[in-house]
Image (cartoon, rainbow, N blue to C red; front, side, top):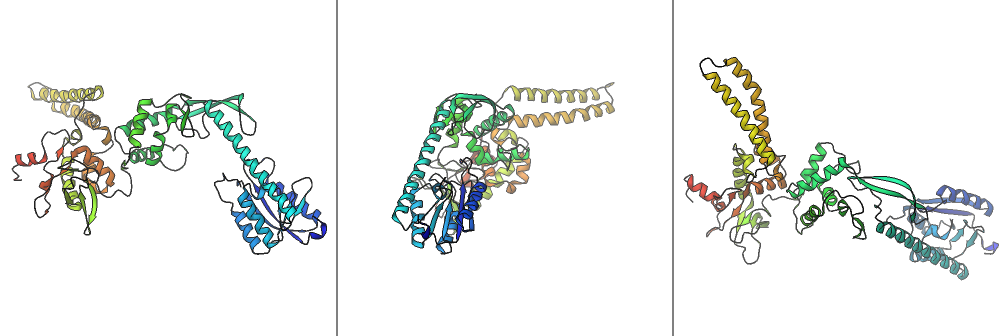
Length: 501
């Protein structure tokens, strides 16, 4: 523009660098700007900087200093804003046009100093505005072309079976020499890469999968990992049930390379989980209405667990007339309702009494034999038999001395206790392993609601029967309930004990 049009004595700078820029650091932009101010004969003004922020429509973060710059312009204290190039301000036509309109309305000049021939433009003049608009179109087109090249490169890498950026927990990578058949968006050759199983981590993934299918709550598994000091995949923070959920649903553990939500390359690397296990996990973890036993919002331990006597569907907690009740809310039934607190108290008392019985661990579920359990039982029987033989020998005339018996007993009893603990562990269903029945009974209120529900559902099938007129609550309305593995209902057991129902 003509020299006489330059009527400002201060130039402000807006400098920006996105992570994809090459050789355009903020420091370099500032140095060139200071030199340009000296050549132009103006004083350097305010500096607004947004390092490593994109200005394209694909940007995920706002640019804080750009917003401050706009406020500065609106304050009418800005007379000229210097840019390395148009793309520093914006790569979207809409915001760029709005920026030009603001500068035109408030008489702010725009200085482009990064070219070989720096120039100052006045948005109030049509020719200057037309040039800046064309530059904006070119800037937007450039980012779209770059986006297309990136997508093409990513698409090509996915269909070659190359693993995506973040390393999947359970795997390690071995990098080799640069390849000729895969390049980055910038044209650089990608190195060959092999994704291999990290057995230490893979063992944890397989255990998580097995325990999840066995019914162990995700958050309980996370707590056990945290208690054992197992580092998280990122190395920071703690394990959570939600993180384990996302992990186990990842098709990458089957060895599949995903792209845009679909399998781009099946069997791209060794699988940690077989397809059947992975399918079962997704069916379990993705089912609608799945209950999260670790959910802090879970407040009612029998909601979604106890059953309606007439229709055998789950009861839900609902507040009515200022009180919470367990109710059957299924259309066509809705015949059962009971006060929540009273029903919880009765079930809690029954369960705690059951947990205190000597056979509580075995009562969690019908015992299924197996090599491990059978061997543990055999070892326990042999130890008890050995102790019995020693006691019998000591009782015979001329038998072993009492001192010998006591010494042998002191040695055998810890072995017997350890063998009994092993049997209890193996005959406890997987969903309850890690729980101590005696601790549960003594500290029942201290356990989270979701874990109490898990134990109740593993121990018993809780069924609520309809009541007669008046709607009175009585523990006898649970007479159709039964302990798991027991053919008798609670009502039948009560009758045997002489309780009149």
